[in-house]
Image (cartoon, rainbow over all chains, first blue to last red):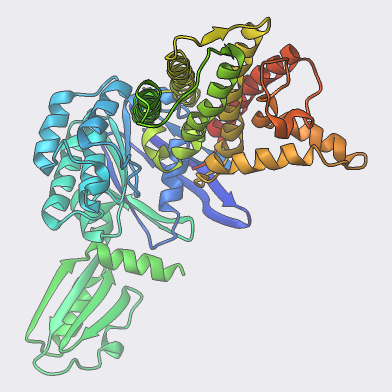
Length: 296
Length: 253
């Protein structure tokens, strides 16, 4: 494989259901060793995009590729998928699922499976229909990770998991990426993407609105956050400029999103004698909300 | 990937065998040890093997119904099974091989059980006829054909069509009765044509002492020769499996 070649590539992919475009002209390249977090409101097209990548859905137009080629059964020797809805067999036990994986997946590593079952505390004898939603998600993750895949596609991987196991899942993803794995995962929890992903893709209404690396995205805009002793004074006239993207007031606090010119804006706010003022990076949640509302 | 279907079929096969053996045991017990006051008269009978073969075929269709719609049954598990490094055709074929083997095994289990029970009275004699070989071929073809017909009817659907496993029985019986009605051209021909896809239309056929099922005796819609219709049944079975695999492979999930 050419090192410059993306591991996962969508090229102008559109997926239409009757008269509805679930994904519109999606072009997205994810390089080796990258963790890409896919964000978007419900119905944004995240799951459809993933299903198109995996061959569950045929693109109406455009192409998808993994390692530079089309997705074939052999692709799944090195690619694992954790779906949003578990897809497991309710009548089978946890152990029978592991056995099924062992038989169907040549790269299945039993010691890894044992280790992961231990981490998630899953009882091997338990039937899947008796597991909680979080336990089913955990089992799906165990099965996906037990083959030590080079590429991971996860649709809401921490759905139903408690905060402790959500953290475990993120750590497992980061570990996989540190070993050269490429990961595409979707989530409704922006904090998870912020913690684990190095790239973020934001979709809305089937379109890709933004795809950038997280650090440069956060650094591109700053937040000037000021607290006043009483109510927030009228700052609009003082800070009005093209650099100011949004002003939010909450009680006696004001948060001003600024692009490029944060020191000047902070100096102008300082003139109103706040009790405290600081300049911080924007968090991903702000960026997400901005992007989604801006393009609507 | 056959492992999942193997577990599913194994459970049903064990239940089926247990029920067959249970009924046979009860029946054998009452034949061997009749209750006080009861008298079972048996002066020795010739039992045509052909009838036993076809009766076993009819019951084996119950197993066909239980196992049919295999591919459709997995529609909620596709995200799991389609992401293994195994071609979809191979997955589907392995499921079908497990099912077909189970249906054939079920058939012979039932045949052996029936034959065993009938052979308990020492005066009974199982007799073969000139068509026994052909009847055996037909008897195995019918449950396999029933399986394939349900597979084709359900394999294309991304939603679960479990009802088809049981619904084909009343549909099949209704088609047989419709073939008795004197419809004008071309409805009568259409009914006959549709009956070619009806497994029940292949089961009872008058052949001397082979079988005697009154409600279809005079109404049998398939007028071709016995062996020809048997070949048609096998062709429908094979074509059905191929179409079902193609449908399933092309399905979007």
